[in-house]
Structures are given as structure tokens and as C-alpha cells.
Amino acid sequence: MKGLILSGGKGTRLRPLTFTRAKQLIPIANKPNLFYGIDDLITAGITNIGVIISPDTGNEVVSAISEFYADTADFTYIVQDEPKGLAHAVMTARDFLDSDSFVMYLGDNLLSGGITHLVDEYNRGGSDGIVLLTQVENPSQFGVVVLGDDGSIKQLIEKPVNPPSNWALVGIYLFSPKIHDMTSKLSPSQRGEYEITDAIQNLVDDGYTVKAHKVDGWWKDTGKPEDLLDANRLVLSQIKSNVAGEVADSDLSGNIVIELGAKVINSSIRGPAHVASGAVVENSYIGPYTSIGKNCRITDSEVEFSILLNDAVICNIFGRIDASIIGMGAEVVGNSTRKNSIRFVLGDRSQITL
Image (cartoon, rainbow, N blue to C red; front, side, top):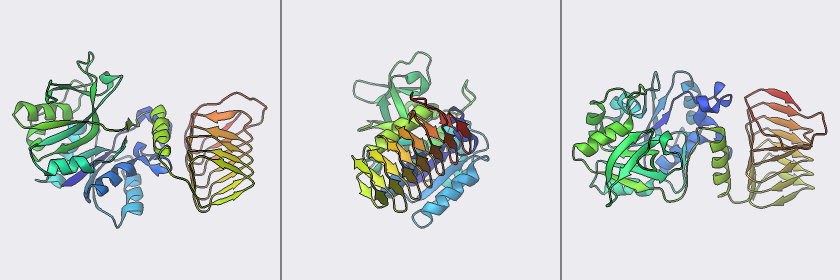
């Protein structure tokens, strides 16, 4: 079995962060979002992995994967010139996938519990596809599945205006090579895309067995800033304390990771929180569900429920930075005595004075 992980697209809902990076490389708990999906594939025994990349951000994705996974899996990079839908990604990867079954994993999705159990079930036979479902409050923003009383798939609809169900497709699919026959029948939808829901519907209509599994645990689509923050919360809620860095005259409580090379001086940290190597926290308060990237510097400030990318600087903030994402190398400097909470999304290498 092969893996196909999607790391293309433009990430417009995450601007300004995605003006300068691939959306799949935005870190969750100081680990690129994309890497969680790659780790799930490798843990399930899948080490021949195709990666769909875009012309704009592909080089960055290739560089990141090559640095961290050089000796753990074989990667083939496949350029998708335009984001024309999930089925189009499968069509673009046709030569790589060949006649093998495969897992397709959207690179901006996070899933608790991994996919090993799904791969094991598929390998036992009995189906040409397995899709993962979860109930959502806004089904019109997803591919929706109508289930029969026996749990079988009856109908799939992509982003319906009037959803007949609140069971949404999670961005993880297992397919046999039969899916290629189904994608070859497709025409662009009204959205101008080749929809994977239509390809799966073709499998069902042609009498092939596609099984639906319901998510056991949590799943996050990290397409918007608030989703990134919630995913960061979910991942940090599972960490265990590991204080390898330097801590002086500080108060730590809860589960906290302080990597080797990081420094916490005269500060208070309430976990769960993650402080990456090279970061310095001094005379500051770090609240729960905060990730501080490599070489960040936080002085005389308060931050909680936030994500700071590498090299970000925060100093002299008398109000608390809350529910914010601070881009790589961005600087937030205070020069007033304002006490209110501050929330924003700041792009890479930006500067702001409060």
C-alpha cells in the first residue's frame, strides 16, 4: 500500500500566514502540521509516499520533508499545477499510484489515534474503499455522506446548500485501484473541481463496497486561524512534561515541554505549553495551550492560548496576548500601559507597536 498526502493549495483562509509559507507547514505544538499525517502513514507501515505539491510552495515542502524524513520513508513529489479538487489530485498522481491501493491524507488535517486500525482492516479485504466520517455543525462546508440504517453509504454530496446529513468526510481515504476507473468518468463540478465525493459515489453506484468509519476521538481541519489554535490545544493536551532546558527563578505547573537550549528566567508557565529550543522567556507569564517556536524571545509580557512561530519577539506587553498567531520573525513591542487582552494574526517578519 502507498500513501498520497496532499500539500498543495493556496491556503487563502490562513492569510497573512500563507503569503510566505505552505499552509501545511504551519506548526502545531512546534511541529509542522503536515508531519502529523506523514507520521500516521509511517506508523501504519506505509513508507512509499507521494506528496502533492503546488508550484508556489512545493520547494518549501520538499525541503522540510527532506530535512526530517530522509531515512524513514521514500517520497515522490508530484506537482499539481492548479488546485482542481481532491479527485484531480488522484488523477495527477496516477503514474505514481500505479496499480496499488493507497491512503489519501489531506496534509492540513489532524486525527487522534492514527490510521493503523483502518489500514489493517482494509488489508483484511472486503472493500474497495474506506472513508472516515465525523459529525459537524456546518455540513455545508464539507463533503456530506448519507448513511443507511445499516451504516452503509447511500449518497455523497460535496458542500450541499441544504445538507441531508451532518456526517462529513474527514480528509482521510483508503482506496483500491478501482478508484482510477471512477475518476476517469468525472467532469468538473459546478465549483470547477473534480470532486472525490463524485468518484466515491461512482464506486457505490457500480456495486463496489465502500465502508464508512466514524472518528473515534478528535479530528481537526486546520483551514482557519481558529482551527489552528484549537488543534494546538488538542495536541498540547496530550503532551507529557519534559524540562530539558534551563529554568531559573521560575514557577512551572502542569504539563510543560521546555526543549534543550531554551531558557525560562523569572517567569511563570502554566501548562500545557511547549517551548522550543533556543527560545527565551524572561520576566513573563505563559498561559495554557501556548506553543513558543525556536529562538523566540518573550520578555516582560503575558501570552496564552497562542502560537508563536520561530524567531518571533514579544516584549513589554502589559495587556495579555490571547488566542493569537504570531508569524516567524514577527515583532510585537509595547510602549503603553494598556491592560486589555489583545488578539491578532500577524504575518511573518511583521512589526507592530502597541
